[in-house]
Amino acid sequence: MSFDPTNIDHVIRDMYAMISGPAGPRDWARQAELFHPTARMMRTGVDEAGVAWIKIMSLDEYRANVTPFFDAQGFFEIEKARRLDVFGNMAHAWSVYEAFTAETDTTPERRGINSIQLMRDEHGHWRIISMIWDNERPGLQIQSFQTREA
Image 1 (cartoon, rainbow, N blue to C red):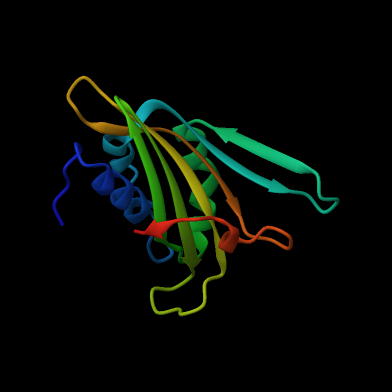
Image 2: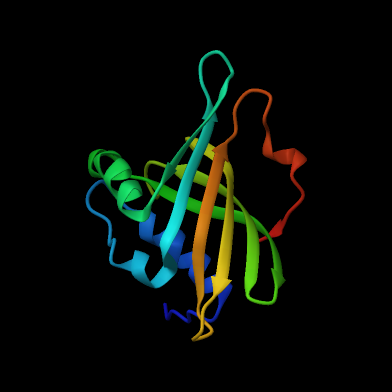
């Protein structure tokens, strides 16, 4: 499938493709095409006591954080729906995802929302500048989120 960096759909599609695959290494060279060099990746959640936490990572820190997980098991994150707002050189996508451990799985092992901020650079290319995400859990369900199909 061809890649057009001036097309937000392509950037988001290829971001999901970059992190998805069977157990083993990922093609991290794609990060340079899809992300701004100073982008931040932010994982959120709650601990056992229900207290919110966040882990903020650079691209290098994110790679180091997820590589052992990806090496040990398959991970396929599929975008199910998206809400996109664009104003000038900035864009914000609310992207609903489902994650599976195998391509053939029919029941996701998790669901959540990626909040993806993008900027258009001097070449007209859309680059991800930051991503923050959270997974469904008791008391937090996606059905309360209004989306359009991706």
